Length: 443
Image (cartoon, rainbow, N blue to C red; front, top):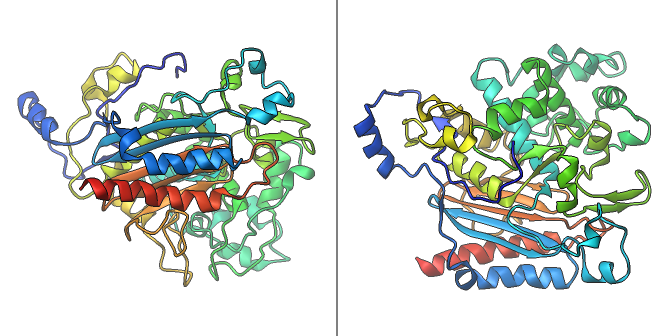
C-alpha cells in the first residue's frame, strides 16, 4: 500500500459479478467494456458552479465551527462529479491561541485539506470493512447469518446462567442491531488490553430481549468483528486489505495509518480525560484504541475519493452488472499480474441481501450492517427507497442511491476539539438535499 503519490487512479473495477459468467474473447470483451460503465470517470471540472449552494452550506458550517475540515466526493452514473475539500485541520482561532502541536505540523503551517487527506471514518468502519467482510464470508459459505453467536464466540455464553436469552442471539441480529445488547459502554475505563476489552464486550449484559427491537450497538459490532476474524482465521485489517481495499484500488484506506503520515491527518479530539493528548492519526474511539486500532465498529481511515470508489463498486452490483474481467486493475495495484488475473469479489444478490431493510423487528430502519433512510433522515428527503448508508461519530457519512446511481460521501472532523458540536445533524441533510437539487436542475 502506498501513500506517496497523489496521482489519481480510475481503474476499471467492479465489486460484483454475475453468477452466469461467460468467457469472452478479447475483441468482444473490449467491445463490452466500451459500453459497460465499470470505471469511475473524473468529471468534476464544473463542480464549483453546479454545486455552489451545497458548498456554501459547508463553508457556512466551517465558519460557525461545526467542523474545521471537510472532504466531499459525489458520483453519478459512473462519474466522479464532485471532489472537493474545504477548511483546515483545525480552526484559525486554535492556531492563534497556540493549540497543541499536531505531530509537528504546526511548524510548517500547512493545515489545508487536500483530496489525499485521510479522515477517521469512525462507524463507517462497520460497513466499509466489517459488513463487507461478512458479505464475502457469507458468499463463500463460511458465515451463516442465523447461526448463534455462541457457536463462534463461546465466551458470549459465560453469563448464561444469569441470562439464558444469550443463546438466542444470532449473527444476523448483531449485524441488524437487534441483539438486545446496549448501544455503548465505556469498556476502556476498566479494560486496558485488547484481550480484556474483548472479554468485557463478550460478557456485556443484554439490555433487551434478542430480536425485540433495534438499538444501534457498538458492542454488537465489536463482537461481530471478532467473530469474523475467528471464521476467517485472520485479522480484520489483513483480510480487508487483501480482499476489499486492494482489489478496489483503495490505496489510501487503512487501519492504523503509518506514523510518518499521521501529521497529515486532521485531528479529532484534544483528549484530556483518557489519553491526555491530541488525537491525530490514531482512532478517536477509545474502545477501538484499546483494541489496537483495529475493531469491527471503528478504526478505519480513508479519503472521500477512496470511499467514492467503494460506493461506485457497490452501485455496479445490480441485475445488469457486467460479467467481464476488470482490465487495468492489476496495473493500478502494481501487483505484477496481468489484467485478466483480477476478479470481482461479490455477487449482486449478496449486496442486495445485506443492503435491504430487515423486516424485523417492527419499525427498524436497519439492513445488515447498513442503515436505510427513515423520516427524518440524515440522508435528507430525496434519496430513493432502495438507498442505504451509514454515519460516523467523527462527522463522516456515506449514502448510496441505486435508483439515481448516486453516492454522496462527506468526511469531517466535527469532534475537534471536544466532541461538543452537534451541528452536523442539521448540516448533513441540508447538504445532501442541495446536491440532489443541483443534479435535478441539470436534468
